[in-house]
Length: 560
Figure 1 (cartoon, rainbow, N blue to C red):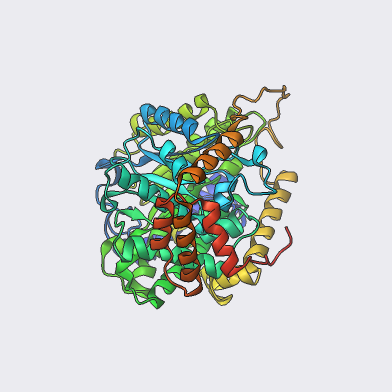
Figure 2: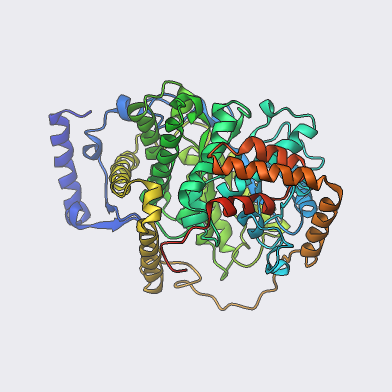
């Protein structure tokens, strides 16, 4: 910290600089970040004079983890290149995963289609399977689909992320667990992550026929309890709070972290009510964050988030295990920033956002493909996305030292400013009763809607400049769609389910579905029964129908 003489000297020299530069006073000249933070023209030691470097920064791998969660960070091991991929059929996605593995991917991530996400089988009456199957991700309706997805892939050595939500998370994850066991990989060694975030189905991607938020919370905590507290799958991250999906709806960096942390707090409180201790499960709580449009704000966001999380876990919950205290997170570059106009500019956008994530200290990273605003990612675009990470890793030198932006007057001031704003916004959510209650009363929807409308207005009015949309326009020619999914995917998946139902023991499946009804009615952990169900080849649709039958459907607090 600076003493009074140092601060006085800095002020004097700054005043002299202002005169020479012909600037007005700092307070009158500022830009504004997407989070509404006013940024001065110049930052000096005066702006960080109150910063306690040992208390607020520390060293990498040491409390409060501002500078990174591991002592050596990328000097010891680079981040995981984990590309989000899925389309058409499990077999075709399997081929894409093999291509990505050969191109340098180091972790798999399964994007599922909307029917899988919503827990609806494609042969359900009234479902437009031709439109929905395999168009937004890979269809995984039964254990047979999961078997095809990971065929001949080294899942013993590479972790897999399953991108879904609580209503289908237990079913899909138990399918994967049973496949792993059948391939000779014990659950104690299975590594990966399930998204399992109730905010994904409510404010991230609003879907129909969802369960009530309190039931989604129950299911999410059932899986955390089974995998981590009960130590059935200790290397699996049973939840990934996906603030990325909230951010895509237009909220800012401060809101993103506040939403995610208050959501996590509701899960922690529920598990504590069940009788578990914080260190029984907190080490496997993970996050999926966004890398969005303001370079320095995003870097400061990651640094502030690590510090806040460490303080919450120690000061609020008394965590002792260092693994409980560190913030584990994956980052994805902003899909909402991609444009259909001048799509090759998306390569530059993605590269810059990926650099934010790396300079901010992520543990794994997905880089979006440049053609995603037009179609599902083509093979060429996906390869460029992987190579983008490899260029950052191999050619830039940004990983030669740990937290290279630490000590920047601007970065340290901005980190502290974002920390204060996140904590204040978290208090607003807590004043509503927490994350789940603010979903039920509609407060979170109003915040999301307000943020979306404000951002759209800023783009239309040109206050937020977007190349190819409202500035630096080029004459656009009609482009062919570079990648189309399999038009026969729906027929293939319906036939897969027809054969499965003909071959399995339907009486045993029916008996286990009755057991699941009992578990739901008695508020028991449903995962042991669902593990048995998926081993017997029950489908996601059959499992989620039981949830809806016993618990009912949520009446959304807004009209959609």
